[in-house]
Every structure is written in structure tokens, then in C-alpha cells.
Amino acid sequence: MPQTFQLSRASQCRSQEVFRQIYQKLNQRVSGRIGSNNYAICPIDSTTITLTSKLLWLQGYHQVKLFSCLNLESKATADNLINFGNDHDYNYGSQMIDALPPTAIGVMDRGFASLKFLRKTSKSAKHFVLRISQNYKLDFDKESAKVRVGTGKHSGVYRVVNFCDLETKVEYRLVTNLPPSGAMAVSDEQVMNIYRCRWGIELLWKF
Image (cartoon, helix red, strand yellow):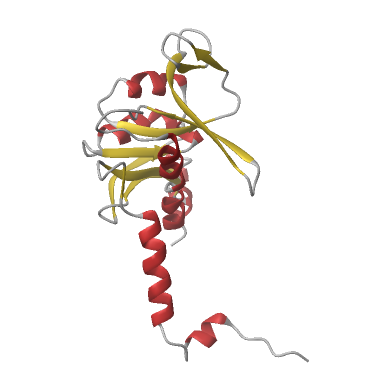
């Protein structure tokens, strides 16, 4: 009968140096700045605080959410926001972006996406990279050489970067107000890599 080993038991007699080296390499991959050291990457996400939500159910708070920003340059969380209620994440996206440092990039997933949020945030001096749903209609705007996102009065023209993950065969549509040219330019490939850094904050929620 084959003998099985538990990782926790094996680690009791294994040097911790290999784990330290792995951590340092992973930290280097998700840390730092993008675009010639011009910007600090700050993934933004939310998570439901399950225990607190249950404790406050009788008080009428059926959901408690924590919004947080992870600054990959300082390695610290900041700009935490707690929401008591069932409001959608996009109602708090602007507040999280406004609280960022001047040279930071707020990186967000589809939960923060809405046409109203895009119109408001695109005019802000703060930078963002936001993944949008496949449901949004996209039309190329010849005059601006950008893309019109959505329809109706809340639609707008933005810089859109598309890429596909060949392993998962998932298409990503990213809207950003980062400049494609000039001293603070960020290329399409860099925008793609900035979004990938957002997954770092999801790892944070697991601990």
C-alpha cells in the first residue's frame, strides 16, 4: 500500500528557505511600477464579510462588504471602505479611485463596471484599468481613433484594450484612461499586464 505524506507534516522537517525564495519571486512578479516607473499599481476589490453579515442580520444589514485597495509598490492595503447593504460594487468605484495617490492606477474587475462610472472616472485626474463585460456594445470611433462603449446617453468613447488568455480561451476587454503616447505612455501590452496584477488582491482575500 503506497505511503502518503501531508505537506504540513513534511514541512516540519524541511528547510523554510525554499518557501522564502518562492515568496520573494512571486512578490517581485506582482510588485513594482509600470510604464518607466511612472505609476504604482493598486488593485481594488471587494469581499463579503460572512460572519459579520450573519451577526448583523437582525439589525437589517443583510450583507456587509469590505472594499480595499492593495498598493503593490508599498505592499500595504489602504483606502478600506465598509458597506452595510446590498448596493452594487460600481456605486463605490469612484470613491475608491478618488482616494488613490496621484500616480497610482486603480485596477478593477467587471463588478465595478457601469457606463455612469466610466463617464465620471474617465474625466478624473486619477488613472484606472477596468475590465468590462462582453455584453457592452463596442463601436470604433474614427474621429478619436478610440472605441465607443455602450449605447444611449451614458455611452462614451474610451481607450479599449482587448486580449485573450490562450490557456483559458477567455477574452478580456479593458477600458483605461492611461495615455498611449507621451512621457507617461503605457502600451497596450503594459495595460494587459497591469490588469493581470489585479489577481494579487484576490490572493489576499484567501488569508
